Image 1 (cartoon, protein in one colour):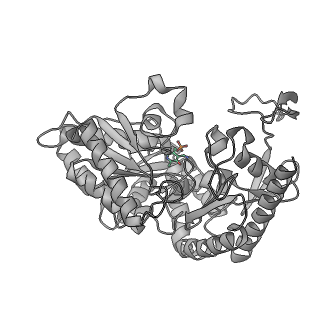
Image 2 (cartoon, protein in one colour):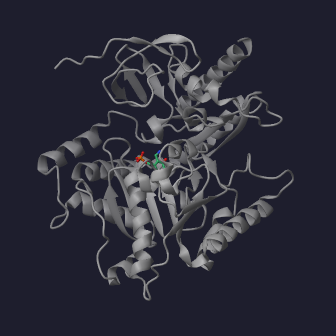
Amino acid sequence: MVLRQLAPVPQASRNGNTRPAKESAVLQRDLSYDFALLARGEGNYLVLEDGRKIFDGSGGAAVGCLGWGNQRVAEAVMKQVLAIPYCATVFYTTGVQEELCCYLVESTKGHMGRAYIVNSGSEAMEAAVKLARQYFLELTPSQPQRTRFISRRQSYHGITLGALAVGGHDYRRAKFEPLLMKNATRVSPCNAYRGKNPGETDEDYVARLAKELDDEFQTVGPDTVCAFIAEPVVGAALGCMPAVPGYFKAVAEVCRKYGALLIFDEVMCGMGRTGTLHAWEQEGVAPDIQTIGKALGGGYQPVAGVLASKHVMDVLQKGSSVFVHGHTYQGHPAGCAAALEVQRIILEENLLANVRAMGALLSRRLKERLASHPNVGNIRGRGLFWALEFVANKATAEPFPVEDHVAMEICEKGLSKEYLVNVYPGSGSADGIRGDHIIISPAFNIRSDEVEWLVETIGRLVDDYFAEKRRQ
Ligand code: PMP
């Protein structure tokens, strides 16, 4: 069959100018941006049908951790598909599923007890929420009154109804609000750039946020909460935002005080992205339940997972029934094979050390090149997970109007022939909310000359974009 696209149709762009946008038979969210036909990936480059070769500075949505076209991963998947591509997990398991779960459990140095493999981050979060609820039902004595979840504003935990309900992404929630469970509430995120009061120390900020969480427990009923949910380093919803030191210890303490579980969503920041396999290792706090995704399989298969602590598993195993959950494609052999091979390569090539070294270089060079730019308000991140936040006024940190779509336009401009670089628009104006940031999250095997090129190219892109914007 010949690959065919529908005819171009004129469509109003976001700026009100009319430009030809491509039409597509794919049910897609937004056709007002040009979308490119991706032909293949070569290492850290994306090759488009029109010949453009673009450096992938974000691994798609912080997914690619080995780059593209990895022969070993492709062969591992093919071998598994030929051996057995599918496994109904009631009576069967596969070697790849067992080995992957075993690896994940062992990687937590005795903290986690079991792993559960699914196909997407949203599925992982759905499972995490249900697991927390079932834990309290299986406890002796049972605590059926625990039905509530507390998470944070400006967070994203997935797009399905349960995951959306516990998330704090206003734009993605808005249209579906009436469908979302009402027993999820939110507190402030830890945002050192925008959340701290003038002159406030990290310690005082942490104490204030811990008190806010404590107050929320009191407001909703301290013995009604199943779990507090947070990303150790907030990804798309806030732009690679790590917490200030001591924050996670303080909120974990509040959870312990009220007997609630701590769920860490590491779908975006986990599996090595921040320089340790699990981002929580850098916080000195281990969660009761953890979700993982993107860098687990590096994009070679749709694969994500949930880890449950030994303590949670003990309670569940003594309980009245197994975890009442299940997907047709859970533990999918091709997904497990891809994840296993990706993780083997990360270990064999010592890529986490490279994430730390190249992350330090990326951080230093981004700050040298862009910290004094009048429209770059903040540069933050960890490992190979960095964001630039753009502002209209650096002194007041005033964001650009949503209608300007600054992050989206910068990312789109990056794909043009002058730059040929792929960076990722986090949320912000990409989702019609205020505050623009772009995410820089290259593959774990990036080299120092590539980091230098990436920073220089992004620097030029940002300079040119805002120079043009000022002339308009
Ligand atoms: N949690 C976080 C932190 C995420 O970044 C994402 C995806 N961006 C999800 C959950 C949902 O994952 P998926 O898109 O694979 O369903």
